[in-house]
Length: 254
Image 1: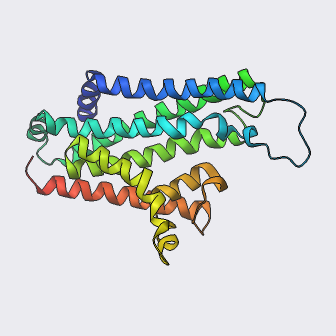
Image 2: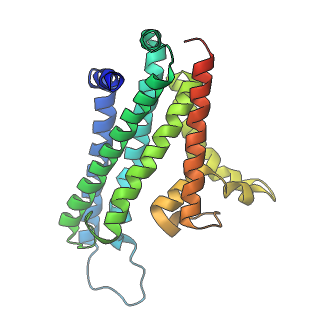
Image 3: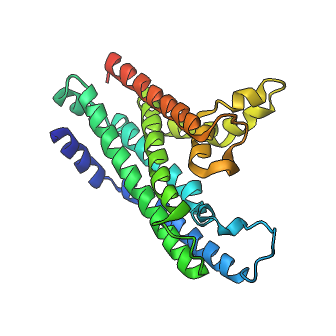
């Protein structure tokens, strides 16, 4: 409990966390306002058999999936690598010679913060977009919106575990963020272009599986199994990466 209190003090006295979480919610809200107005202006009598792209609550939380989730992950990376940059990690490990309790405490705190921030962003986005558009389906408290309300925070929590493991491995903010963004924004999308085996490899990309579980068929891509197997694989990779980061942290100098 004392370690959690210590980590909480570090978070609340660091401006980067406020900025990243605040910008994440603000971007989600701003995009929800734009999409709500767009849905309202494009409203009218539905045409039989016509696709209703804007009717899904997933459309209303585009800002959450595009920005908020990434920013909470970056906040977790900065929290870990910042301690190495300013050498406060040495004091932390002097107080906790076993090291692993400090790593677990920081991970638990940022997992909870990530879930809270993403949940708030989802709720605010759906409520605001729903009011502006007049679309009764855009609500976080029933139907598909309720599913998104719990799946996105869980997805962000597992991603937080993964990026913190990567941060403990690399110990450098710029390198960790660059590698992570290149992986999820470029590598996972481009690996399918490899001749003959590309699509098979793409089916195993962890964040592609996580996106499929979170956002449904629109994000299936080359994944050939169901949503829950995709979730299990995504979770396993995230936890494995964190465990590797923990083991390396226990073995090397601070």
